[in-house]
Length: 337
Image (cartoon, rainbow, N blue to C red; front, side, top):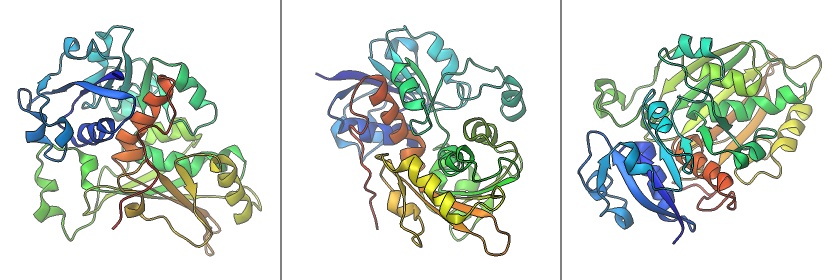
């Protein structure tokens, strides 16, 4: 018998992907799954692909359903995780896949989210300097946002190395439809999405303050784009170089940051990231290029929004919190085509 894990919000896309990973994890045993509208149904009816867990019944999302677990994953809408987490015993390690505990700045939370600003938890991006050790010591970890993962991985090493300026950073981030969740919405119908690209939440996306907080960016323009594919993110970040900083210096900064990382890969020069190459994995693929006209550095990053952007990242964090190998139950290999 391994460590007991529970998943709240198990009927959603992130919850389903999390369960797929946990089902094959060598050290975790799923003992409880909860949902709201789907409570009372068998998991196999909600996620037909999860055959090994199909007989589990979705319980209502209440503290008592999670309290006996060693690790609880909260894959819940904004505002739902914080009050639930307060009622869980300290013996339960908690990873929040939502946004409740990410932001340190109450004013930024009010501006972009509204509502009550919950106590910030340890930020769950292990590849940041010093963060892996902090996660390993923590009992409460706030998972990263999906767009935020790709942007922060692209930006932070260049700022830390003094290669790029922290202001006037421009981010264009294209995301698959699963990033919007599983709730029925007219603008996500197949007939609305297929054959179409559209920008959304332009000028006020909720991941902006998180990206600034974790990357060191002081001014960020973000344009998210909805693309007609189920999963994946491709982020393009344009930064002004510091003085005469070169492409070689930018590449060296990224290489130094990620050369020993199991899931973050700087691709060979000339090879661009593809979202499909990261599908089903916990990988992030990066490339950097110099724009010949503007002189800006352009960093591209591809991830699976349900993998490194949500469920895979959550398992990576839980592994660290439980003293397990960081890569347990995860793969760096994508599923393509």
